[in-house]
Length: 101
Image (cartoon, rainbow, N blue to C red; front, side, top):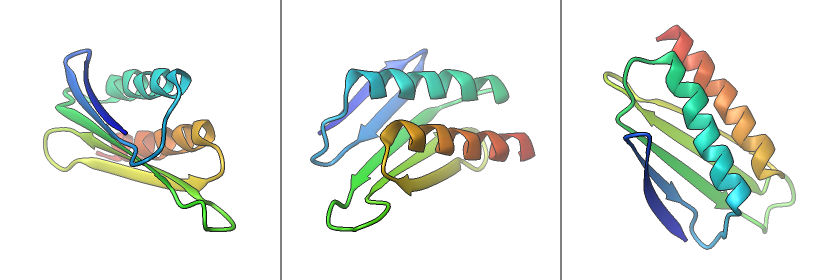
């Protein structure tokens, strides 16, 4: 399942493969975008990637987010077992990148 939306004038593309994500996760994605966009002047787009490699014994889930900003885009990913924890981890990694830029 994949979906796109326009959130606060930002094109958001979420790629989930065969994974169905809950409304809570969709709300958290919007929250991450809202919190991170405070750190930059302009956001053109956001791409979110969910991967579930259930065959792996550890860190089967992976979340990656590309924050499309003028200049070089920021990208971060993390793997683990809980989608919400992964979104929070990736948000923090992106925040650190945006502060450096």
